[in-house]
Image 1 (cartoon, rainbow, N blue to C red):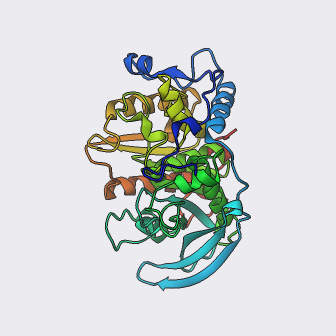
Image 2 (image 1 turned 90 degrees about the vertical axis):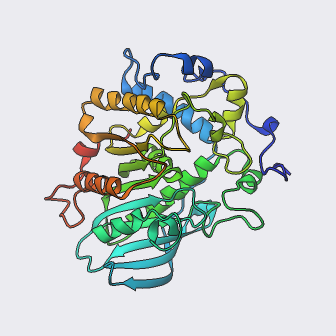
Length: 379
């Protein structure tokens, strides 16, 4: 058995070796002692070349990627919610090698033209998709429901280990069974492929304009949405709430590696054991540049409390956008609040999506819709 039955963690000896040729790797001690965050784009480099390097390192640490699903949507049941003006479709999305992905697709009623769509990635909540698609229950942050009521088509899949996808006999967000089955992959890779399958599903819907797709998420969902946009050209804008945290000044950098419950990237432990990190997350998040992105963080965040380092790292992302000539596509807000997605910030993020995707009732050919000039080239 690959996992530890007491902790659900993989033995460190089973983690892949570090990459001695990784040019992005840096000493954690030096990273923390430096007077400022590392540059995303060094002054003497071109972004296309730098992006290729970051992409290579990131894909290496993500591990093996399964083929995504076809996008086929298998209906389970449908509920009409006239007060919200939506139809709630309970479905299975073909996830390819991952099997069926339980999801909800929220469709505004009386859709008379293809409209923008959003992949809503849920946070670390045992209820999975229902944590963002409903208002009833604890710790709800209903951005999926609110966006659907605003006029967007919204797909909300369960991530593996949450909602209807908890491994039998295990608690939610325990990933040991995944690593026993997929020792050369990572949960980051699994989530990414599942979100690509969800984009495939949206692109196949008659109600959706496939040129106007965004991703949104809080916490786990926030960085999942950002990582998706960095690798999938079809995702044209991102909202990330409390889902950005650099290694710099993180008191718990092992949160990204092997641990007793949710393990993101196993190789991080091997790197940290040698006193270094394989990259900085500002570099990884920047893979989506120059697509529009709305970031929100809180200074009272107990999960990611190193808000000064977060601000500095996001500042480096902003500098990249400025260098690329698209500073207006980068929004970064730091609030005096906890690890949450407050209603007033959610409304600002929806306005942001309206601007860059085109409001849901706007014709994409004549209105304020996203196009190649606005969202940029992902490659």
